[in-house]
Length: 112
Image (cartoon, rainbow, N blue to C red; front, side):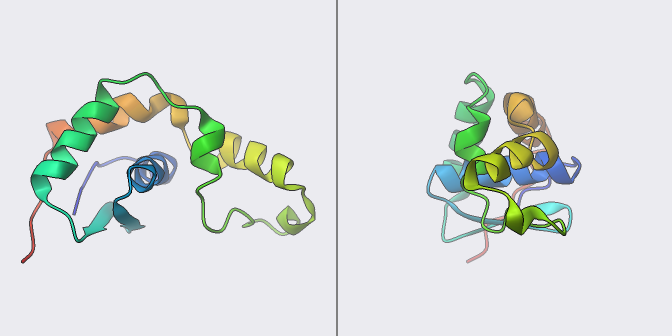
């Protein structure tokens, strides 16, 4: 579990970034749950994310499993839905800071 202590948009952003790195990640409540991984590998990934430039928001937005959340989202093209997701549901520009904050709060627990 990672407890980055951020809002929903930033939590979703970090979850998508971890998914992009092939972690089995999902957010639940105020935390990110990771399955079948080692804590050291997670810390290494967070350090890499924190030290890298902010990613392209489109790549993260495309990883969102259910982007159509609002009433009329189903009527949007894939491209427009990606743009809505980038603007309203994730915060790609803040990803390095989100990862750095998660490292500062490095409350991770390895479950056997």
